[in-house]
Every structure is written in structure tokens, then in C-alpha cells.
Length: 514
Image (tube, rainbow, N blue to C red; front, side, top):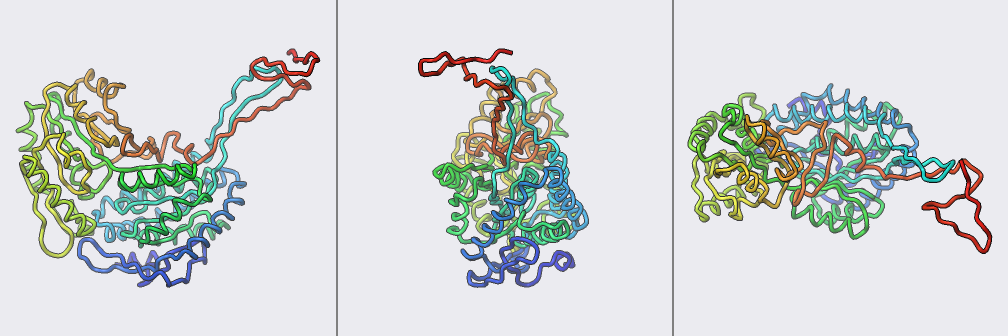
């Protein structure tokens, strides 16, 4: 595992950093060990951050913001370009660490680092396109326009399943917008965060900056909540479960701050009778099995036209039988482990509940005994209204159901608390347009002949309902990290009021004429 040395991962690392040469030396909060979910072995450990560490990180980040916001945006983009170069140089090593620590297969880990590089390139371009707009004033000799300014310190809380990419979605866009960023990574994947912070430190030092990207590692919910409650942090971006995200949203709203929430998904694929089955099956298998079903965009519900149900089941079982399960760093492996023993237990509980509700396991359903947190990818005949189907279970369980008319399929798709990603496989243009119309899918992402998993960074990523409503990455998601300011300039010598109002104390107010 030479990649650990390349990335500077020693046996014990500090758990907080504000920039080059500013790692904390505190050890009072104890040690957090990172376990490989494939074997249960300790990879390395970090010292957790203390309250003192947190305050040091925050104050350094606030101080850096006052300087960083005055740097022209295109120059901010140059720093992100350097980060993209560093990620390219260390892509192999970083993807190896991600695979080892998160359990996702090496190919998916490489894709995650590539996603960081891609969002960096998008951010570099965005640094020259932080556009406002100009409006025509109703008052003569007045100019009316709007511009966008950075918010300040942005807090980013990420989950284990994408331990670094989701941070990059937020951090790179926030940084070119003029903000500084504090990162609280998942305690399941601290080493990946420490490795990325080390790359950031190197790039910041070479460019003459400090404190733009900061990190603190903790499994202490009170310390994490301290960040969420902190009025000095105007925006909290949180990725995780709906239950925790709802709590985050309530706390931030109570202090009138901003929250960007990327929460649970319960994503459905609809396959109608005109669909290309080979295309559909490949997308369904990747969507359901990729990252062992631990993506927020994983395919969890399959809604198949009743005339194709048996054929689809046969195709899926044939595909599932070919899935090689094993160590994430093995290039022949297609599916790695779940993240933890708790995740394995949740998998088993969900299947028991599905069977008690009347579900039929068509394939899989077993925990693979031995080292690591391995389970079989599983197909279950189910009904959409069952509580277990309405919940997100972070595991490779795919619930199958049928429909007769496309309107019924769309209704089933929408009949879930979450609204992240959805897909329709069809060769019927009218059905595709119906599915994408206002009365169609209610998800933030709706695809035709493309699966639910694997969104591109050029579009805004996020969903509705219990998914939280946040948007990250492309399109105009950059506006989440900035404040809008409307400006009026009077370049005349008179003072006309808006809406034609005349105000005075007995004298006639003069109104300018063009």
C-alpha cells in the first residue's frame, strides 16, 4: 500500500488543519481509527479534534476570508486549477485509499477522484462567469443592476459513500465564489479527508495562501452540532440521511442561516414495453449494485410493464449471478463490502420486514460470512406502499413491481417521500416527454434511457421532498454560496422616488425629465 506513504498517511495523524504547517498537535479528544470494511483491519488512525481545535480552525478560516474575498475571482480559479493538477498527479494513490477506506471498488474510486478533477475544471470556468444582470430603472438617470458577493465561511459535512467528491462539489465552487471552507468529513473515512487536506495545503503554500480550505475530524455529535449552530458560518452544506438532515435544517433555520441539504434517495427505474432491454438491464444492475447500493442515487425500485416482468427478472438474475464480490482493490471485483456491521444488520432487517410484508426474495438475500461486511445483491418482489419500500436502505436491495399504464408507473415513481433521481427506459417519444413534463417525475433528476446513478457535474445535482431541495455542482448552483445584492446608481442631479411617489412638506417636489 505505497499510496499511504505517497499521500502522507502515517500511523497516527492530526485531525484538524487550517492550512500549510498548521496541523493541530492536540491529543485530548482521543484517537479515531479507520477500519477497512473489506477486512475489518485498522488502516491508520487520526487524533480527533477538540473544541479548541475547532475554534482555531474557525478563526483562521474567518481571517483568511477577509483576504480571499478581495482576490479577483479568476485568480481564485487559478488556485483551483492547481488543485486539479495535484489531483491528477495523485489520482492513482488517492483512489486506492478511497477504495480501501470506503469499500467501493477501485474503478468507482478512480471515478470519484475524476469527479473532483471535473468539478475543479468547471469551477475554473465559473470563476470568470459569476454574472449579475442589469435591469432598466423606472427612474430617469438611474442605473439598476445586481451583483453577487461571497457569504463567508462555508461549512461542509460529508458522508462516507463519497468521502471526497461531494466535498469538492461544494468546496471548489464555494472557493471561486470567494468563500473559505471548513470540512467535517465522515468519521468512517477520515484518512481520505486528511489526504485531500494535505494536497490542499501543498497547493495553498505554493500559491501563497492559507486557511481557504480547513478540516476538523470528529465523531463527537456535539462538536459537529457546534459547527451547525455557529452563527459565524452562514452556510452549512450537509450530505447524509433525511433524519439527520432535517435536524441540521431546523438548527440552521432557527439562526436564520442557510442550509444546502443533499439527503436520502429512493430512486426508481421505469421500464415500459417499448424499452431496449439490454440497455435497461445494464443500467439497472449498475444502479442497484454499484457501491454496494450505498449511493444516494442507487436504484432501489424497479417498475416494469407487466408484459416484461418475467423477462426482466430472468435477465437480472443472469446478470447478478455474474457479479464478482470481493476485495475492492481487486480489478476483477464488481461489488465490494458494505461500510460496517451496522449496515449489514440494516440489510438483514430490511429483508425480514419485506418478507413479513409478503415480499418474495427472487435472488440473493444472504449475508456472506467471514471477514468484512459482505452481502449478496438482492432482488425482491414487493409492493410500493410497504413501509420498508418507502424507506431508503443503504444496501444492494432492489424492489420489483409492475404496472399496466405509463400514468400508473409515474404515480408509483412519485409515491415515495424522497425525490432525488428517477429514470424511464422507453423508445416511445410521447411517453418520454410525458414523463419529463410537469405532471411527470417529481424528482430533481429525471432521465430517459439513462439510469438513476452517475450524474454529471455539469448539471445541478439534488432532489426534492425528503431529499432536501439542495443543489450542488453545475448549472447555477454557484449562487448557493453567494449573496445577491441589488444596486441603484443615480447619476443625475434630481432625486425622483420609485413608483412615481411625490413626497414633500408643502412644496412641490421636482421630478427630473430625460
